[in-house]
Image (cartoon, rainbow, N blue to C red):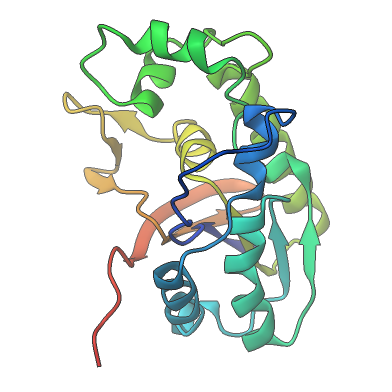
Length: 214
């Protein structure tokens, strides 16, 4: 029995400047980022993709920008959003630790985590820990919703970590599955097909880096 999972990276979040609540941790601040105006348009356009019609079950991270993306999919399919913290982005932890670790690296942060899967900042989460978290959630979903079409709205790093279970990294540190590069844009849809809980295909369906002008 085949089960389809759509991994959806949230749309563009709102960039903010100014004074923040100094009592909030970087984690709390990260969870509260909402969608930008462009992000709202991206999320609406993404929800109109034919692959996201007739979704049986919809899950989202608890972060505001993920729920803001998921709400359009919920509306189109007339279903509710299920929230699970296992879909939350990796915990960054102490940002000074992260900045120091990245100081001399010649790759992006997500790629650095993939190359050093056990590293983590104080109060943060390693690639290995985040990958185990999302992988266990996927296995649970596959057991509970066999034969269903499932949409999961999450975050770029976590989705990348999950896909690394089945993809290789090429010399440019891109995810490759069966000679195809799998890109995780903001937002994007990545389709996974499982047969009796065994992955049989990964496909990048759509990237929405910009919004089509009318």
